[in-house]
Picture 1: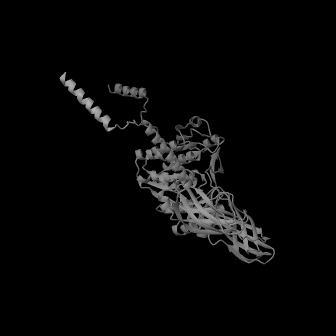
Picture 2: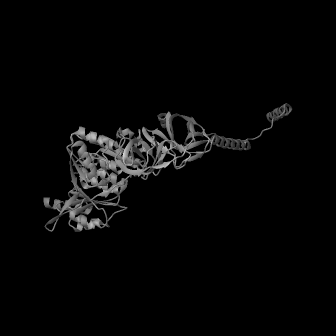
Picture 3: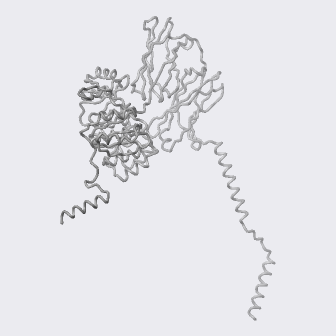
Length: 578
């Protein structure tokens, strides 16, 4: 009887298509088949979160090679395959043909992010913006170790993520690095912790301080994904590209960290600097071992590149202007993001140093622009050369890049008698325009290029004109910046810092006018006139329509009213007689 019952239950399970042992076995390793870095990151992060190994394709040619790296003793594979941009077609068949049992997720982007977050079964999350890959790398080991799952959030997908979080439940949320204001506002009800201390190095150090004890770190700059750095085994420290930022050196000295492992060989030079500055032991991880056919070989690490925001600065020319006694240097920002720079310039005459010039404060340059900077000095010697040591980075004080350049100094003699002043700084709310009023108070035509510094929800924002504008003598012009300021933004900016580079030569705006000016809230009268005309037209239209609909009843004379009353009385009497 019991045997018949068991057979019946087995038959019912088979007919219903239900697995007898519940869900599929937990994966032993993760394989990612996608050309999208976010999919690769999420799959690798899920593996690190679960303390299992991950592997990812880096090209279609890599598909057969990857099979050699998989651990054949761990047969249960979770395959994360992009539904939009896979490297290999139907890679599941390849894996199953090699003897693995495959659980497949075909998805990408936010959908994949939510699916893996559900599988992680956590209520703790770290939110990062999807534009900055280095932020995601910085938090990966901490998230894996402390069981936070990483979510990529922006203003376009925040509603979808919010719905997931609301349904899932939230224990703790960290918003790391830059994030859209829409993201911060939507997640405010979860009381998130914000980690945004300035540069990528300051944020990275802040996450490192959350570890209880660190003896060893991986050294990488967050420019690629590699299995080891996603595993959660060691924290990640950003050492800089060509120069170790000062705050990184000070943190290492105070943290007690003894060992650093450099991932790849591109940072070997900066790691040597770090060793000299801190006495930290440094090792290099540059390859991975393979055992095949009884012999072993070392192959390059599998690295998946992340979007990079290149810092690329150059020095185009250096001239000494005898008329103004200034060394004129033209810098060019060839990168795709703004930079701050600070130069130290040794001036040599026939190879002998005669003076050193430089920047007292860091100088900001917008992406894709040139900038002339003047350094005052009395240079009467011959055969002059300039020896530049120019440090630059994303924010002041976090200079990770450096230029060393020797250039011959050209002698010129050009007077510049241009003169400007700033009349006011105003914000036109209806037109969404910040206007800087500039007047040419000199006697020559003058070119001016303006930049303003604002605070937007606690973050500094610099806006720069695309090109210089020409102002004739005695003429006034507005430098206009299109932006929308909320009431909160207006409160944050009672004063606005304005910086104007100007001069007679359009290509060499060597003079500087800078100051802080009260932000005046103004109203565009041209816009107001248009609005008033529209209101009048609408009002007249309504009035005309109303008049057409009114029923005109003429007033009656006293005699007509009395006659009507008398007629009514007679009619009533006749009806009574009847």
